[in-house]
Image (tube, rainbow, N blue to C red; front, side, top):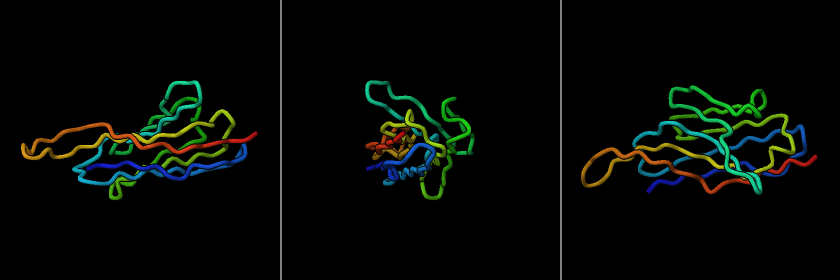
Length: 125
């Protein structure tokens, strides 16, 4: 079984910082891209930032210069450092990981997207 779990959300004042973590665990062969998404009430889920296994990053325009994504491949973990938070950053933040597993009994490699349960980030004005 594979699990993805986020942590680090909470309530912060505008201008403050939070650091989110997301760890993947289980029978993992390898992980390709990892990313953070968010969904505010009444809005669609949107990409915040993602990072390849090699470390290439991509950010939404709204968070460039304020958020930094990083990962530790040895720990199957991705982080999101969020600085200068704004009320419009308030949302549930979800982690997604593209995980390769070995399918038993064929021993073939299968890639699937795994999502965490989400962590609430609330920024007060």
